[in-house]
Amino acid sequence: MAERIRRKRKRSREDWIMDTVIMVFCILILFATVYPFYYVLIISFNEGVDASKGGIYWVPRAFTLSNYSSFFTDIKWVRALGLSVARTIVGTVITVLFTTLVSYAMSFKGLIGKKYYMIFIIICMYFSGGIIPYYMVLRTLKLVDTFWVYVVPGALNLFYITIGRAFFEDIPDSLRESAKLDGASELKVFTRIIMPISKPFMATLALFVGVGHWNNWYDSTFFVKTKTLRTLPYLMMEIINQNNTTASQNVNASLHQSGNTTSLSVQTSAMVITVVPIIMIYPFLQKYFVTGMMVGAVKE
Amino acid sequence: MLMTEKKSFWKRFKKQSAIQAFVWAGILYLVIFNVIPMFGLIIGFKDYRISTGISGMFTSKWVGFKYFMEFVNDYKFDRLVRNTIALSVLKLIFTFPMPILFALMVNELRNLRFKKVLQTASYLPHFISWIIISGISFQFLSKNGIINTLLSSLHLISAPINFLTDPKLFWGLAVGLDIWKEMGWWTIIFLASIVGISQELYEAAQIDGASRMQRIRYITMPNIKTTIVIVLIMTIGNLLGGGLSGSNFEQSYLLGNSVNADTSEIIQAYVFRVGLQEGRYSYATAVGLVQSIISLLLIFASNFTSKKLAGSGLF
Image 1: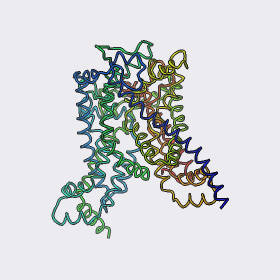
Image 2: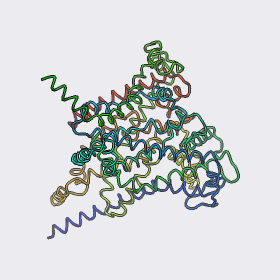
Image 3: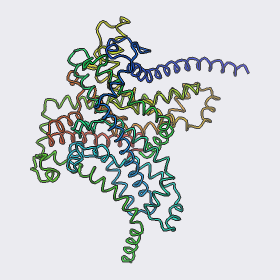
Image 4: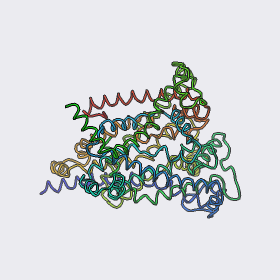
């Protein structure tokens, strides 16, 4: 009895120290993660010229909506936003359909040459020719400097083929067979039977591919020259580059001032506009990404 | 015998011809977007001109290792290789262990609601692009950014710190941002592995009088060893890309500038600059190939080491 009490007391002291240390660290990490986003949010609602003086930490000092109104009245930003939305929707639909179709076919029992197809896919997953030969191919296909360069090159997601194959292998064969007996073609089997029951897989794929499209800036940087074809992340990158130049030239950063907004403050509103959709789909993402990642890791 | 086998093969193939067509749609796509570019690597050994198109890749004149030598003799060679390797190795040393430590901490949290909030928040930066992260870094770390303003208003510094332009600070900046962005995300995989450990082990250890630290050291750590090895192999597989998140290029491109170029410029960014911006396609391809070869050697070396040490590898 006495010993039990002694052990319990000893344990609770260790517990107390550990719990406190861990709690302090975790609160710091939480703050360091959330505050930067919060800061951008309040700056986006503050007058740009005023914000460049610094000293704003918790609430906007000179509240304004002008950063957002300059964003939405500038055809350059609005067009970029529209293009980003369009490429995300079109690109996601294409990738999800194509990847699902190929991974379903790859899961087919008794598929002739399955082993070799898989080896081929894995080789393609790990090796690439690098950006220059890739650019040549895009150029030959006349994809460079068109909208299609955003959506065609990523149409097949190899990583998700490996996940999708595992998913489809769990679907009972009898389901497909019975439909075949009714005289349905393979394509019909796929669209009428396979697709409806593979919603969880397609949803996961769509969320990750969608976020990838929404965030992608380098295809617009590498493969597009036409100014009217630039996406939202590209425009933000341009401003970052300007900031970078001014930072390295040692002059004050708030250039391109118009009224009480600056290019920097309009950019903060663009940042908020980019991050908000991601936060909105976040609950859905969260539902799927743990399993998605675990399968991925096992497959790796 | 052979005839019937052959016949049944075609019969079987014909029966699944629609499925084969689906697979081949994918294969064809990969041939165009992956295999042809792989063959395109030969332009690194040739005098290629863009005006000759795809076929020019194969018909242009061989020049052997001319462009490789040109790269090796370039005054930037040492800097590019040093920065590429330094950034990669620093990330391996500092970014890689963070999710493990964080997972151990999160697992010890008693307050379940706080635990959930913390996890949810910590994944978020993974889904945010480097563009946004660079924008945020600028807001926080530039000369008149929030950190410098705060430090000088507290009289901790007399002159603002040039986080974004000081060449001495770039590696630290890159690794720090990498940790900030990816730590929470990679914690998922370690936490899932910790949750899978049988509770009975912990109870037995507790009865034997093991302290909490001892339980972490002797039960949790050995049980997540396999996961750690898997993630480590994945990291080393993409070492020169920047490890887990593959962030080297984006960081170098977005946060590098003329002032900190001495520590921020890496091979990948250089390939882009000389290739797509200056149009020196053959040279850029040769430079990219150098990086691929170093990468490949690292993958084989890490695979070999992990097979020796842990008994399992990538292939």
